[in-house]
Length: 196
Image (cartoon, rainbow, N blue to C red):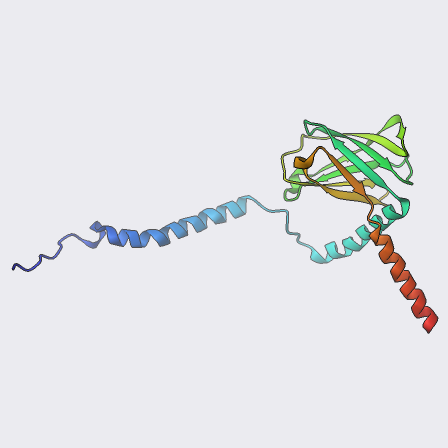
């Protein structure tokens, strides 16, 4: 029986080494592509100043409590083109102070909009005042939006999450639980003052 002949082809002419090299080469190429995507698409989800944002949260809670004290609620009806909305606001607030509608995209700050609300003359019905809003640009599609209405003086705000697939309307109501927390904290302080 003749002895098997050794293969005279160099190593790079065989498919097995190339199959072994292919995995790591694909991973290296994918890592460079991922790096390029990360550098080109800066995300607004993560904030740079955590301390400042933490202090800002307490200010926002005070505005939410003020909206609850005033009994403020709102209903926002978006038009089918996503270019405007009708807003109905009720509660104890000064109708002469300008109001803002804020539409906050959950991931892209560039898509956020701040719109000055225009009051409709003689538009009060059932304790609600009607306003209109014309957006700067049609809303891009998103699974949800954060909708906020606030007064120009920065005293109160109401907000909620809007899911466009569930319909063109969203209700924004003050969180009454904030008043309960405030009342329980005040009663706890009164009890501790009495016990001293």
